[in-house]
Length: 178
Image (cartoon, rainbow, N blue to C red; front, side, top):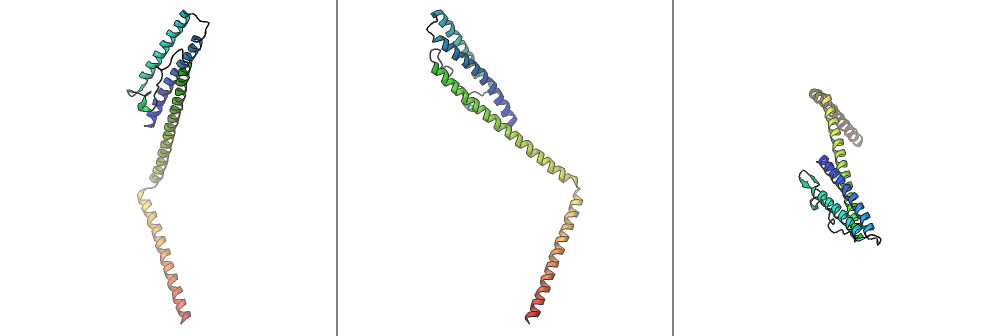
């Protein structure tokens, strides 16, 4: 059902936005962590916050569900992998994860647009069927049958006239040839 897909994609989008906000914070923490001006105690504090945010992101990715199924998984093609691969001292791992999120946002957006298009097409088809049904229902069946019979009589008359004219023309041509 297309409405269900839209709902699922909306849930996925909201979770991805929250995870994306977390990855932005992780990037900021990593940049600060890699500064030579911080003490070990300050770096440990940043590392603890980094670990807490990654844990929260993993929990969110694991608990984002629709109808009891995790939607941020391979099952739905929205796998949020790489959270555990990020490291505070490895800026590239965070960049790679952020790129993965961008790709997932595109997939969610595309899926939502497809589902909305499907809904629009279904509504249009229902509207067309409803209009056709209303047109059919406007005239009682006996009137429709009578109109059809009248059209058939007109068609039969036209065919008889053409046959008569063909017969007359054949007689004239035969008379001219003899």
